Image (cartoon, rainbow, N blue to C red; front, side, top):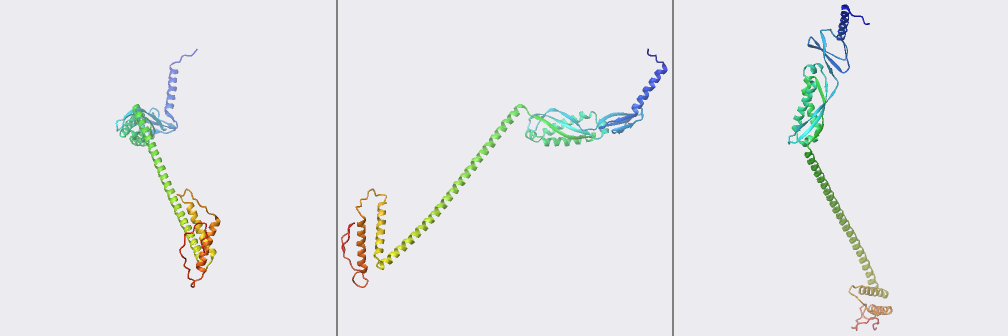
Length: 332
């Protein structure tokens, strides 16, 4: 059975409760990453940093517990009209950190809501001053502009905005389809340009190759003509030398030289006659003995001319004769 408390017991309990409240309000432990603001009869006096602190009971009290760690805030999606009147839907994320607890507590009301609204307003301002193509390709530039503007505005609140990132830019569906067709056309255009450039380079290389081939062929003909001319020159020199030797031999009265000279020319004449392109059939009832007999007759004429009687070294006059038939020996 619980004994009933009298008036003294109730007073003691009340006194104990008051003592606990005094001790609780007297000692404050601030965790790491937080700052507490202290007011003295409603007026800000100091900021408590992490650790153990003793306050004056009844007079001093903690009013704001400020998180000093870097925090992240989602920026809700909103519609933005660009400079070229394109409607896009944009959302983002912001990172901020409170550097001065007193300013964050007393310079602005509803800190997070203020940062969010300030960021959304500047998103519309910055992105509305850009064309759609710039908007889609210059996110880094957009983030830098937003960070500069918002950080300057929140400095008076004791807040440092560290980063602002645009998460998504969503144009309307019809605009996305138009951009896809434009991208496809641009890629096809680049492909055709590259193909044309390849054909052009191939044509240039082919022409260069043909030119080089013609140059090499001309140089080959030039070298061949030079060699042919040199060969003909050497043959002519050899022929002249042979003719000179034969002439010297004939002048010296050598019958063998005359026979060689006449036979050589006779054979060459037969070669030319046989190899003529308009010659279809050649009837030549000749024999080797007939050719030798003709050569012998010519040799005898030469012997009579250069070695016979008459005035000193003067050739002997020969009366005209009938044409000599092939295979017969002319009369002495």
